[in-house]
Image (cartoon, rainbow, N blue to C red; front, side, top):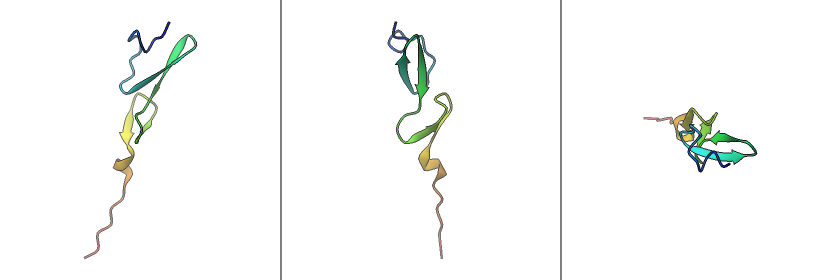
Length: 50
Protein backbone atom coordinates (compact mmCIF):
# COMPACT_ATOMS: atom_id res chain seq x y z
CA UNK A 1 0.00 0.00 0.00
CA UNK A 2 1.26 3.48 -0.84
CA UNK A 3 0.26 5.64 2.11
CA UNK A 4 1.14 8.81 0.22
CA UNK A 5 -0.98 7.96 -2.81
CA UNK A 6 -3.88 6.77 -0.63
CA UNK A 7 -3.75 10.06 1.36
CA UNK A 8 -3.23 8.15 4.63
CA UNK A 9 -0.32 10.41 5.56
CA UNK A 10 -0.73 13.77 7.27
CA UNK A 11 2.31 15.35 5.63
CA UNK A 12 1.80 19.07 5.00
CA UNK A 13 4.43 19.31 2.24
CA UNK A 14 5.95 16.15 0.70
CA UNK A 15 5.32 12.50 1.44
CA UNK A 16 7.80 9.71 0.62
CA UNK A 17 6.39 6.21 0.68
CA UNK A 18 8.52 3.62 2.51
CA UNK A 19 8.04 -0.11 3.06
CA UNK A 20 4.96 -0.28 5.27
CA UNK A 21 5.02 3.40 6.24
CA UNK A 22 5.85 6.89 4.97
CA UNK A 23 8.16 9.80 5.72
CA UNK A 24 7.25 13.48 5.63
CA UNK A 25 9.74 15.81 3.97
CA UNK A 26 10.01 19.55 3.42
CA UNK A 27 9.89 21.10 -0.05
CA UNK A 28 13.22 22.12 -1.63
CA UNK A 29 14.26 25.46 -0.14
CA UNK A 30 12.66 24.57 3.19
CA UNK A 31 14.00 22.71 6.19
CA UNK A 32 12.54 21.05 9.24
CA UNK A 33 11.22 17.71 10.39
CA UNK A 34 8.71 17.26 7.57
CA UNK A 35 5.79 18.46 9.69
CA UNK A 36 7.13 21.89 10.65
CA UNK A 37 9.04 23.37 7.73
CA UNK A 38 10.48 26.85 7.41
CA UNK A 39 11.93 28.61 4.41
CA UNK A 40 15.71 28.74 4.16
CA UNK A 41 15.20 32.39 3.17
CA UNK A 42 13.87 33.07 6.67
CA UNK A 43 17.43 32.57 7.93
CA UNK A 44 18.94 35.11 5.57
CA UNK A 45 20.65 37.92 7.44
CA UNK A 46 20.54 41.28 5.74
CA UNK A 47 23.03 43.95 6.73
CA UNK A 48 22.38 47.52 5.65
CA UNK A 49 25.05 50.18 5.84
CA UNK A 50 24.14 53.84 5.49
